Picture 1: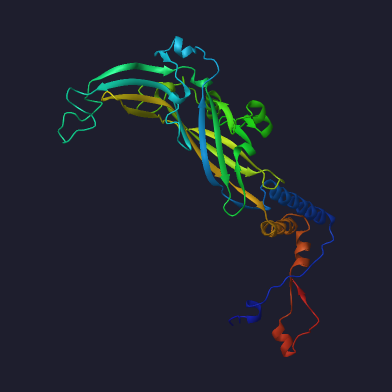
Picture 2 (picture 1 turned 135 degrees about the vertical axis):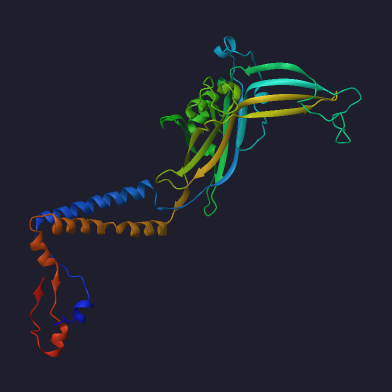
Length: 373
């Protein structure tokens, strides 16, 4: 005889029933899990500043200024290197010196002057075949300065000024009002740090952070004497081919201080990238001077999260985190029902089936009895 399906059993409704298991092992374990979760929630809220309404900062201007050292030295690569050295001023090394968000410092250069042929003006060619069209590859040039290194570049100092503002918040600050750090890309340690007090001691007139080119190179892990891995370098060293360093400025709130922002400089060299700039100058005598520059390219990117205290942000993150307390219950019940020696007894008390209510409605069952599963 075929077995009949019991619809009450098939579509039975499951509901929760509170059972107090009088076992100190489970109770202590449950409280321990809850305490650990509470500490984790508290740590996450404070450490990740989940009580703030955050937004990415709106980048302001990043301005870089180069300054020559008080006294020059005669570095080893100038006395025993493959190329001679020249001493240039800061404005000549920094090209162009009015760029925002980027900077280029010359480490190796060649200067060539191209004189226009007789009866030619380089600025006035009138046809595609005009012989007066200037072309550095085909025009005859006179080398004014042979390929040379720029001496003592590591001891030049750089001043970095930058600012940010909030879009949804009222935050608007320049770095002279914030604390900052230079972080090494090699070991993640702080190479330099700045506060309002240290800036005032170093240079009361400075509006930004002052550090040497050498400190930037060391933080990025760049050795100018190391071989360049750029495809077109052809056996050159980094000083000759040039390098590209990306410096991320990462902003964040100082914990528990309203509208107080700090930042970190995070430099990273772009492996295999060289950098060169060709500067073309038209002279009054109808000639061109070409400066072929190779050097250090700095690219600044402003990044991070800034915010202000917001009760709804705190409440939202707190409610979401409280769901983790269910994990404590899950772990204890998993141990109780699967691993502890008394798991069968625990299961009898936890799970219970009622009588078939179809029989109760028909009056064919004792309403007061239950069957334990």
